[in-house]
Length: 465
Image (tube, rainbow, N blue to C red; front, side, top):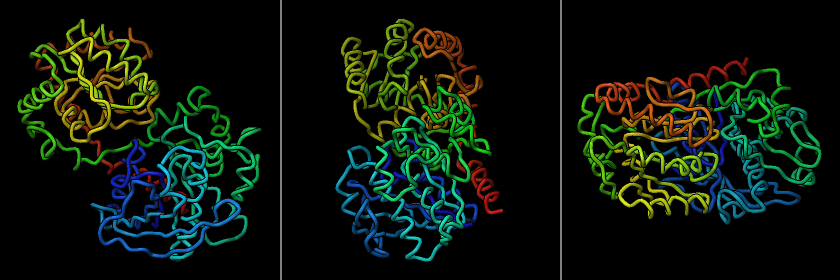
């Protein structure tokens, strides 16, 4: 099959969240199955091509009621020569951060229109266009328009994968006319807003979500953020496919970022990483003191306010915390205040440091993700691969990937529920053999992209007929 993947972000170019991981890893996995894969992403202000990249073409692409100059840069996706990465370069994109600002939705329509123009320039017609989140929904709409007009690109099937229902790309009704999209109100719109995600969900040939539980949650009024009726109106149910991780990049046996490499048969060596983590964050620990690691955006979605409220209770139970994250200014200050109030027990790094994050995964005993909602999550997958035991809320992909054999789950989004689960955890932590069995069970999980890519490929094949 010929597969075009369109996304706002992709590792290694730019990665803000799980979408970047997926768009960087899934193309490789699909190519490994023998498919011809192209990846198209915007070149925002921080994205640079690699040595050897070439400009395939330049030209004018529609932008609102005018045109802008666009260049499409081609290169093999780093680490995967079988995938062709294509970067959309335009002053309308490079002059802005990837996300945010008043022109955000306009820029992502440009991404879709540049993708269509690229297919016309190259004569390459995909069997399937795989769009991700609202940012890529414009190309889904363009395919519908092409079908109505009898254009060649209309032969492609479209799949829209949802990574986060909370962000929908809403704009005023005139936005559709300005970009010559299907007129407002189109399926998925509200009475007074163009809803780019809603349109994509209504118009795509298939819709998938990044875990089975999340696929169910987004059909409920609470989980769909107002779009449950759109999903209910589709003939095919939303398919839930759990994300994988790059098991070569996240491998404690060969990770150069950690102090001591280890594996499932050499878990005792992991203690050196634990000691290094405690030293880095100034934590006072002994063998009976569980270190709780957090690598996360500090936002309410991730339940970090719940965790912050539970910290006094966790510390009373002997816990130590190592926190890496940034996000909501109020939450950043909350965790700074906790570190100041509890020296030796709470350590905080505001920001993101990839090397330090690896050291948290490799050195913490417990990895906490108390998310209010979590479409899939990869932190828990990385943590288990590194021998950390997850403490998570039973929601979305966390419910699909963490079991009582590999971690601890709680239901209510409250500090009391988190603390109760931590009490259960402490009982097992005190039993070295039981804790080792839980660590090894998590490390044995197959969290690679291989099986997930096969599930995507099966859906794509059904659309080809």
